[in-house]
Image 1 (cartoon, rainbow, N blue to C red):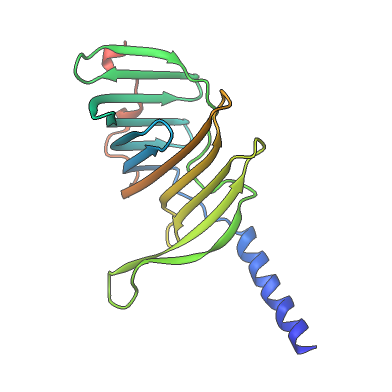
Image 2 (image 1 turned 180 degrees about the vertical axis):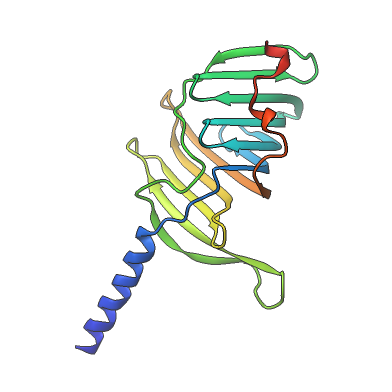
Amino acid sequence: MKLLVLLSLFAFVALAVAQNLCVSPDVFEAKAYAYDHHARTFVIGQLSYDEKQERVRLIDAEYENSTLAQYDTLYAFKEKAQYRVDMKTKECTKSPLTGDYFPFGIFPKSTYTGSFILGSLSGPGTGVIVQEWYYKNADGGVWVQLYTENGCLPVQAIFFGKNSAGEEVDYHYEYMDVTLGVRDPAIFDVPKECL
């Protein structure tokens, strides 16, 4: 009987944790790293994110087959438009944004899989506790997301599945040096090269 009560208590606590998704900041900036394992492309850059405006700005360096390209890209999801400036030529390309917007936070109906320590907690400032969340979308794709336990800041996201063309994809994202808010609200304006 005691075992049944104890198991019930653990199940209740686990359910309570799983139902309380932490809420990520709705405006932040970070250094971002992305790797597409199938296309073998690597991107590193400065990310600015605004959930309410549904805008993401990425000023990056992209590496593909040892070739470097640098871009300044604004993803304006409400307008379904992508503005991409080639930093070398200063040419702007506006194209339709076909992908759906999704917040950088934990997906609703995600499953809490556990908390882990990145680094160590054996000394001050030597580690951070992160939460891992698992989400399976309607198309069978799987997201595994890591967020800090304190502040719910994004740390890592991995996606395995298919893209809109039905091709297998495997994306890996990491976020570093996350700061709340943005230094310049104009970062979400359409780049001057595109006006």
